[in-house]
Image (tube, rainbow, N blue to C red):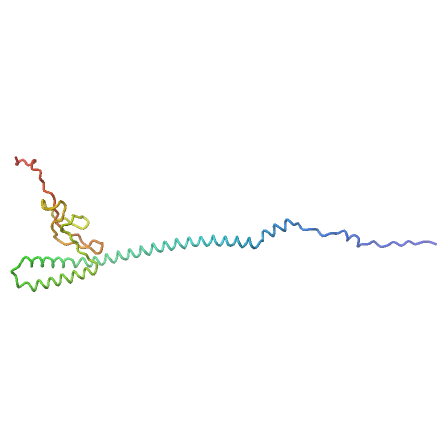
Length: 207
């Protein structure tokens, strides 16, 4: 008899038993995790927003300062223009004040003219009303007599040599000066005292 040997088929399951999953690179995963950390990203975004807000704040402060300077400059220029226009108008009224002052001075020198009393009262009333109106508008009369000569507000028409008054002192006011607040409308025309020349030794006729 002939014996038959049977061969078992190859077992495919044995080859698959040795296969193991390939492990992932753990260091690479940690780096990626660190790069996409939501907390770190939020902190970075907040820092960027903070820096940008500081830039905008600085710009705003600069613009606000520029606007404030522009506003002040505009107000100053507008006030100066208004003062200039007002002074141009008011200076036309000053000759009327001069006429009233001369008339009143003339009346005081004519004591016997009793018929001029009513006229004097009329001039006094006009002078007072006009002076009050100018004062309400900011016009101030300068008091020059007895003051030290000031070329900023005085105009010296005469230099009077005298020993009765201190040198460079206003001894007489020929025409009154006026200010519009702190702006000169017109200077006062004055007579200024000066020391007389006492050098008689140089006089050939003396001696």
